[in-house]
Image (cartoon, rainbow, N blue to C red; front, side, top):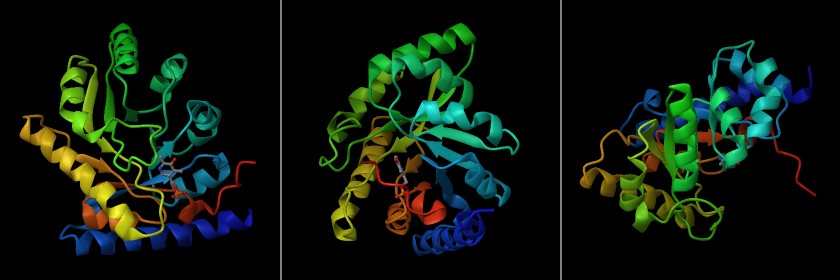
Length: 235
Ligand SMILES: *Cc1c(COP(=O)(O)O)cnc(C)c1O
């Protein structure tokens, strides 16, 4: 076993304990908050260690990585969500391996997913990704356009909208990050106000801020480096 493999069970227990405590501070119970393993760049061997320690939810950013690890990971039951952007030429692979796509922010991709699902007579869970920080302008719909977007998305009945996902402001300062998460809550409230039901999941918070995200109302946090160690920096 590598050094990181040895460390993983204790790190998992620590993250879970911190998540439980944060849930209680927000007037909820630990069972209201799922901890997703953010597994990008991590080898299947390390992920298996975490799955065997009782964690069952994986988030991957790239469909290629999901496909590459699928065989090895099939040894332990788990669920995989896509938390990075989906290109149209990867939709088939994604639908074969993931139960939820958390990065829906374009109607043209949604429509292509719908067509594939119609052909397969299948459905998939989705979250709409919201750009709550404006700094990271790469992905996510604008908060002000959420009701309009979700109304359009509703025509694609094979996509089951379960929640919202955001990446908070990349900052170490909690007071700078907090408005991102409040923004996501406000989007959820605006959707509820417009009559959309079932948009209950809020996927927000990563290693450096997951307790803050839970205190603000996250139902799912995506934790990578606190569990697996630092990822190698891209050159
Ligand atoms: C990498 C990643 C995470 C986890 O980040 P850590 O800082 O390693 O916990 C969460 N969400 C998304 C979308 C990511 O790409």
